[in-house]
Amino acid sequence: MQSLQSALPAAFPAMEGYHQAQQGRVNQQPPLVEEELMTQVGGEARMGTSNSLRALEDATLEELASALTTQLTKDKERAKSQMHQLKEAERQLEEKQQQLDELEKRIFAMTDGLDDVIELNVGGQHMSTTRGVLCCAQGSMLAGMFSGNFDSSHKRDKDGRIFLDVDPPLFEKVLRHLRLRRIASPEQPAPLPHVPEDLRAEWDMMIKYFGLDLYMYGMSASCNIFQRIAEMVEVDQAKLQENDIVRITLSSTGGVPSSSHQEVLGSIGFSERSLENSYGAYPNSITIKFLKHRVKVEAMELRAKIADVLAHMSNKWTFKHGTESINMSYSFSRSEPSTGRLDTPGLGQAFVDEVVWLFPRDFCLEHIVLWGHVIDKT
Image (cartoon, rainbow, N blue to C red; front, side):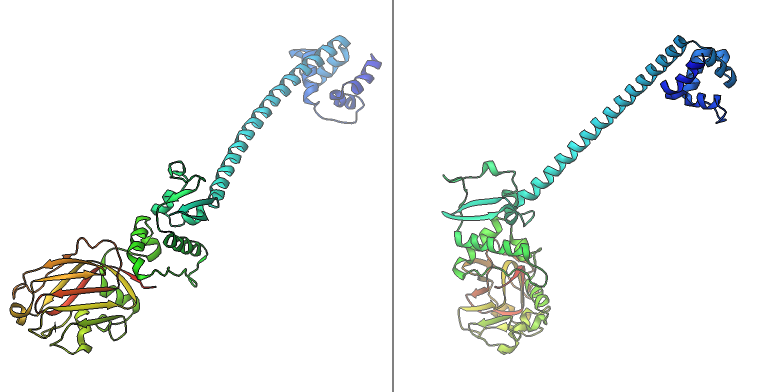
């Protein structure tokens, strides 16, 4: 029995506490494994420490082996359960990692997609750019076309290039401006494209079609054109001509001197004076040349001089907006000398730098107002 007691600590490390207790070197409760062994060997009636120790002394080798086998079985089950939990945790971790990897791929795909090279056939001319350039004007028709959602529906040539049926030189100006916008800064903004006069109408239509007017020119809601120009150049609205912002030309003049013509564009216009022709000289015209801006007129208001309205204010006129023109009319009277806002339908989308009124007879105007959009001339 003595040899069994001396062999147990070496054969079963879990009983080291018992071996030390027997030699009087420690004075503490036996380890949990030993407690379980003692319980299994000695039974419920011998759960006290001293009784349990005596139970171990009295136990046979078979009883100790059985108790250890039982304990090892429990430890194995516990380890198996812990291993299952560990594998489950690893599985969940792997799923999370896969989700993160997928998200990373999607993010990189979106980023890389902006740098995809897009091959274009623009009116028969080959052009190359990136998706990021074509999509930089967020919310525009052009950005939507090349967002990647409609690649399969684009018309393509025999080489697989996306076909755009627009003027190549004009679209090239668009690409050049969009490229510069990506590297521009408030200190160095991207210059607006220079467009020859004979191509201006086509340019304006293309910009409008691709939805780039707001992005390129910062156009907002319809405004009082002369008021807006005065704000842009920071001058008195009634002094646009003397500051070389506009130039007013009459076919003939019989009223205020030419140096005062600009007052008709001011916020209130003339008072008891008027912009008028040399009465009796027919037909007559008023031409306003915009020297630093381009405008798109959507409406106007003309106010006649009450004292001369019946005898010297034509009720019909032709309004020329660049190369386009429309016929307009209003019954001026002493009680209603102002047209109020008169829309100018049918003028299209072109920006122009000159507007003209053609009157078949006399005119006597105290105030001229134009509503529409204004952009800088480049």
